[in-house]
Image (cartoon, rainbow, N blue to C red):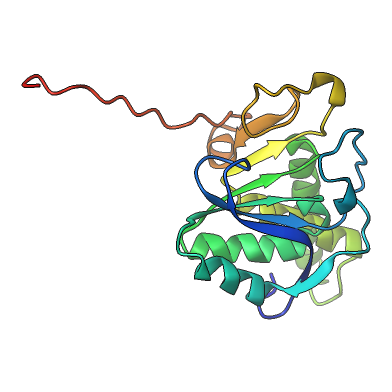
Length: 208
């Protein structure tokens, strides 16, 4: 995987104090470009691949670190998994610095995982065949980055926005088909495990 100093990312924008992109106060990163084209998208201007602000990942990371109020970051868009290498490098750097990382995607987790596993299998096959020094096809390299991004995410909100299933009662997703997936737990169990907020059960001391 590339280093934070080697890559740029195309941004639609950032929100350094979001309270709607996951629990608590978060730094939200909205990437530019999304091929899903969901009707009713709340960020339609983020869909075209062109038009974003090209930003050095090192500069974005420095801006996040300079914000002393946030300890969690959400990748949204746009579609983070259509800039997988840049988002993976950013997410890994954030995890190394102790940040929690969420990501939204219009893809299904199972499809992303299938792509990542197929690319890793192909990489292993090439290594065993003595072809490791040859350049990987662009699609395989991108799908390897998809796997790297999944590895660095705590919670993945997956699935396209479906306008007919929109509900204002939902927390941190727009339509009822979308899932809040606990990625580390899902990896441990081998089946999709939904994220659950931490419960704080405060009991009144007996001497009150």
